[in-house]
Length: 145
Image 1 (cartoon, rainbow, N blue to C red):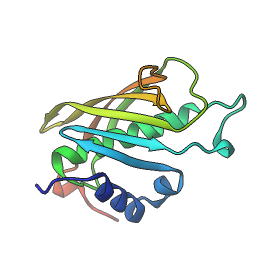
Image 2 (cartoon, helix red, strand yellow):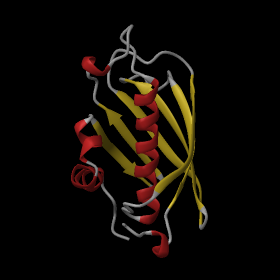
Image 3 (tube, rainbow, N blue to C red):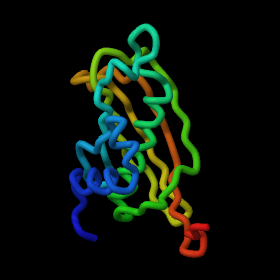
């Protein structure tokens, strides 16, 4: 497999899932079994009190894990979330939101990963932790009707 770059992930997302890119989500880094995603701070998308909403945090965690899956199997458009859970630890406010995902186990039945989320440059103050499982459908399941 050719070395994956954040730029290649962003190009794929901008053409195949443009609403994610339009919503401010980008891949900022990829590495062996890891990826970091960013949601660009947008005051218009904040919930009352100036907080980054739970759904925004969840979506970024999901995107980061999707990007990390690409580092294992290449860019697979139909790699899909099978399970995802998130624990919100503290309010997220005041800047860009980041999510760093790591693949903990890559098997034939799927890939399991963990995601840490933080705001701005403060990588030590985790605002949420998520875990998830991704699967890639077999060729017989890739039908489009």
